[in-house]
Structures are given as C-alpha cells and as structure tokens.
Image (tube, rainbow, N blue to C red; front, side):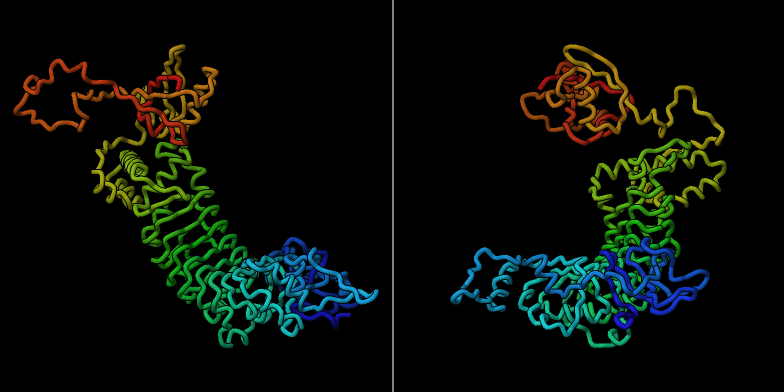
Amino acid sequence: MTSHHHINQRLSLKSQLCTIRRIGKVPGKTGEWLGVEWDDPTRGKHGGSYGTTSYFSCRSDSPTCASFIRPNQPWDEPRTFLEALREKYVSNTDASDEVIFFASKQAEEVGFEKFARRQAQLQGIHVLVLDRMRIRFRPGDQDNVAIKRTCAEITDLDVGGNLFETIEEVAELCRHLPKLRKLVLDANHIVIDDTFLANDPVEAFTRVQELSLSRTLLDWENEVDPLLRQHFTSLRTLMVNNNECAHIAPFVALPSTLRTLELSDNNFESIENLAGLANNDIEVLILKNNKISEIGEPLPFPSVRELDIRHNKISSFTFIDTFPAVFPNLRHLRTTGNPLYANLTSSEGQPLAFEDGYMLTIARLPRLETLNYSKITEKERLNAETYYLNTIATEISKAGSNEEAEKLQQRHPRWKGLCDEYGEPAILRKPPSSVPSPGTVEPHSLAARMVMVTFTSNWISWKQELPKSFSVYEVMGSVGRKLNIMPLKLRLLYETGEQDPLALGRGYEGPEWWCSDSETDDELGLQGRKDEWALREVELIPGTRTLGTYVEGREASIRVEMR
C-alpha cells in the first residue's frame, strides 16, 4: 500500500494538507504507518514522536503539527494546473455552442476548437488566483503544452496552499508564463535541494519582481537566502510571513534590487536578530506581530525609510531613542499595539493618554514625516517637541543632585537638540518630597486634560467640563443634545478673549512697527481708538480636530448660534 507514497509527498485529506515525513512501522502497532506533518500546526497530536521516542522531525516547532495515519485514507484527488484553471476561470458550458448532427448522431467538437473558445474567456485576465486547489504539477503532463498558450498574458500568479513538492516543479510551471512578475507560493511546503541551487538561474524566476514565501517554513540561511541570490535576481518585494523565523545571520546578501521586505508574524525578539539585513538596500521593513522587545546591538540600517513594528512587545521609549542611530534615514513609522502606549505615566506617576505617547514618539525622531499613516504637520511637531522638552525639564527638576540631573539629560538623547532649537527651559530644582501647593494642577493629570466650557446661546447658558481630546464633532453632539437641536444646524464660536483691530479704510496688514523710546500712544494717535478693536472669535469647524487644539487653558467661552 505504501508503494504509492514517498518522503516529502504532499497529500490532501478532507481538504487538510500534509507532507509525508516518515513511512514504516511503529513499535506496538501493526502494519505500515505514514508519519505526516500537517500544514495546520494544531491539526496533529504530537511533533513526530510516539511515546518517548521521536520517529521523525518536522519543519514546524509546534508540538501538535504531526500524526501517524494509515496509508489507505480517502485522499483528495489532486488536479493538474490546467484542470484547476478551467474549473475556476473557464465555464464548462457555452451558450453559443452549436450541436451538429450527422444523420441521427451528434458530432463531437474538435478539442482544439473548443479549447480556443474557452481560452478566449481568459482574455484580459492578468491575475490568476488558484490557491488551495490541490494542484500537483508534473513536468511530463500532456496538457502542459497548452499552459503557455492559455496564460501568455498572466503577470500575477497565486498558487498558495497546493501540492507542489519541489522548487523544480514551480520553476517548470513558471517557464510557461513569459510575463510573470508576481508569484505567491504561500503554504507550499516545498523542498529546495542543493542541486537546484547550484544550477543556472531559472529565467522565469529572474523576471519575478514580487515573491511571497509565507508559511512555507523554509530555512532562511540554507534555502531562502541562496534561492533569492541565485534565481530571483530582479526581486523588489519579498514576503516571508508566519515562517517561525527567529534569526537572520549576519552578512546575508539579498538581491540588490530588493526594496520591500515583510517578516510579520515570526518569532524575532530584537532588532539584533535581523543583523543579516543591515547591509542591504531595503527601504521598507515590515515586522508586525513579532515578539520584539529590545534593540540589542544591531548594525545600522541606513537604507530603511519605512518601518512597521506594530503589535510587538516594546514597552520602553529607550527602544525608540535608539532609532536615529539604528535607522538614521527613517521617515515613516508605525508603532500601534505595543504595551509602551498602554502603560504610559508622567514623571509624577500620573497616567498619560495614547496621544501623549505619540507626541513623545514624534519628538524623539526629528526627521520623521509620518506616524501610524498620519502626516506630521509643523504644528504637531512644534507641540510634540515643546511638550517633550518640558517633560524632560520636569524630570530634571526632581533630581536630587547635579550628577543625577546629568544622568537624566543623558537618558534623553534629544535634550540638547531641543534646547538648541527652543532654548533651555528654566529649571527650579526641588526635593523629590516636595508637595504641590493646594489648587495647583499637575500638568499631566486628568484635570489638566479637561476644560471647563461656558456655553452661551439666545436661549440658555450653561457650564460643562469636557476632555480636550473631544473632537469638534463630539462637542457639537453634546451641545445638540443639550438644546435638542441637530448638531450640524449649529455654529460654535470660541471667544478667545484677544482683540483684533477693525479695518480703518483699508485691509488689516498686521501690526505697525514703532519705537517706544521715541513716540507715545498720544503721538501715534491711538487714544480714543478703543472702540476700533473687536474681540477675536474662532469658529470650531465640524471635523475630527480636537478641542485642545483650539483651547490652551482650562477655561473657555463658546457662543452657540444657528446656521
């Protein structure tokens, strides 16, 4: 029964894919058994062992990726590439078919003519998605000659989760696709042997610009790296996600054309684990959903301009502080989902909001242009850097000695640069045990993030305390509920308390220059002009802009009008 099976054979059982890792007897059990590794690492019962004995090894580290099963299973029937293509893209019925009869017998249509009409249904299609179709490609299959005619215009091919067993099978298939530029081989547990890696480059592979090898469990050093260097010499984008990869050895020579590398859902714990990528020309590095918590001692990544480290285990700003040295040309960063932003506190031990964490991130990276897909405006950078500067100054003010103050300054690499930019803030040193005077609001407390707003309308006046993080939409909603009026029918005018001059026969052109040493208010003719100044009002434009960007203090007056 096992004569039909071989090591590394790919099989499908009730749509569950597996790879044969062992064929033979199991002590204490009768007959032959297949030791298989399931593509779904939770499908099995062990990792290749029975009792206390290990019988075969698996690519996955999962303790439940393997099983022993009998060979005589109701295996799912594999398909050829063309069978899968016709099943998914080519209709088996054609309303334009004419049934031809000779006497009383129906004539069979010539196979090539039928195929030509069905092939026409693929015209204009450049992307084929044939994942999980149980495709098994054999170079000697008779219908392979038709692949090139059928797929001559195909540029993108997804054959993930199929029954390919070797890289040679994939190479032979791709030879029939002259315009192929994107290849997805996800979840194909293929074998890449030394013989293939020693061969001349496969021309079809050298044209591929985007490649995905996610969930293939290929070894980076012995399989992925030599495969890319030898055959995928024009590659620009590479995805190797969910591959249980934890380390890339130093001095890996990736294709010189590679610009984007995604290594999400792997097992990297520090940036140092990626040392092998440092000397390459990667511009976009995506490391989502790993276990990264520290920098380590990596080589610099001078070419990286975009970095995605969302949903890792980063818990300290010390990690971010190293970026100017490790990623000197970083312009775009994504950091959400890290514990760093969930447990932020001020130097007084007060909890901080997510927005505070993002401001502290922006301030630490002076060349950053976007954070979490949001463009950093000049005003946002100004607010972030002055906020961070004052935060550092508050920490230093609590230092018990000059030595401790110097250590605090060294802990913040941006301190000197921020002082050069905005001037060193005045620091009044106080003992750590000093207690704020009654009525003093701690700058990072909840109270400091609230504002008492006096609303005035033609019908009613009232006071309401609102978070500064409220958007204008939320403020309008609160007012609308109070007045029982649709929010978008209202106008909110913030009375700033400042004054602007009224026009004096011409447009206002800004403040006039004058010298207090040579002229007085009387000489300038300013007496009697008090009625020519007006209180400044700013309309709160409906949108996601927060109330705190309009109001700086803890009190505000807003007039409510109908539109």
